[in-house]
Image (tube, rainbow, N blue to C red; front, side, top):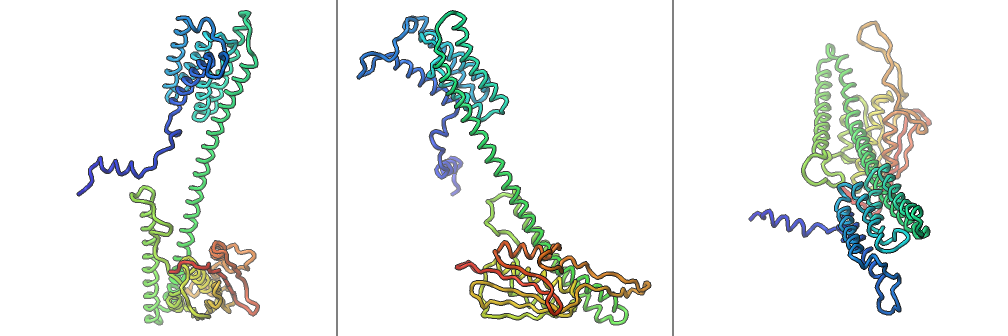
Amino acid sequence: MPRTRAALYDHRMSVTPSAPFLRRVTPDGWAAIAWLAGMVFTALLRIRLPGQDEADVMPGVVIVRWDGLLMLFLATALALRGSALLTSRPAAALRYLLVAAVLGSNPLGVMAIPAAQYLAVDVALYAIAAARPPREAGRALLLSLGVLFGHLAVRLLAGWSVATTSALAVALTAVVAWLLGRSEQQSRVHAERTRAQSAAQAVTSERLRIAREMHDSVAHSIGIVALQAGAARRVIETQPEQARQALGEIETASRETLAGLRRMLGALRTDEPGDPGTRPAEGAGLPEMPGLAVLDRLAEVTAAAGVRVAVRRVGEPRPLPQDIDLSAFRLVQESVTNVVRHSGADSCTVTVDQQDPGALVVTVEDHGPGPRRERDRDGDGGRDRAHDQDRDRVPSGGGSGYGLVGMRERVTLLHGEFTAGPRPGGGFRVTARLPLPAGAVTR
């Protein structure tokens, strides 16, 4: 039986943790509590409590008369009204509280506004400084200090005595409350900026990861397609059977690449923020990626392009963590693609060394002469043209191509060691040593 709406609401409320009590009280409520607490404290100062010979402060004449009580009542009404407006209209709320502080101090027979009557103002200053723009918060502080010292100035002009030290202490508490509010706002702004930067960094990292996966998935297949298309174009009239075979390889590679792109784009659409459902776990929703187990298939595809790949396995094969298995395959795939496109070699060797139980070592090497100029056989005048650019085949110290940079980045992320450069006897070698974490989860 489906749950009713009320039952679902009760269930949601039962599993949602409640906010702490202090967080549940709004600034309006804190300001009202502060005013009432100040009034209670003012009354206690004028009453002889148990253990005292006399009250700390002698009650003035006005406070016990009807006009004094009326002023205290009006001051309390103004303070409660200001407290109710603190969230919606903070500037107006502060004015109400300041008038209440001045009005509530008059019947007390004091020479300056007491701190107890300014507690609600301090709460308002904190709330305004924490939630409002800096300019508005600054005006609130100046207004509060102006009322304090304006009250002293009026008493001095009237020839009455003043308590400057008490007024300075009250002003100090107001400044401290304002500074605490500004600190709260700056901390919140910094936290929001940090979250925004973390989100932007996560988006950038995800884009780089997707770009790397797209490059690794597509570059190899497109290189094979380009070579097969060139071979088919040259022999289509003289050796139609070989041209037909090359076209078949082109079709197969193109379909595989297209299928991989569709899987990846489908995963991206699934993981868009607007989609319903909970956030997937790390790695969930991504297209299934290959590993070292499919090196033989990679060798077959590369052999169809005219480059034989010999796969050597050293040590007993064992399951590998998924990220290391995928990265090792991508390193081999990118290196073999570079051999096909840039080396001029007709063969290369891939060595997968698993003798060391704590690390996986992958090596790809060829004996090719590197980039070369070859004759264009189109019959259009025999122009010379350069082979594919050799951006990826540079020494390990200064790689500027995306291939070596991507491989080095993969290995660095796995805390491994990466070297790439010419072999002493000619050719090129790429070596990656990937540490295997103890107790890692395998595929």
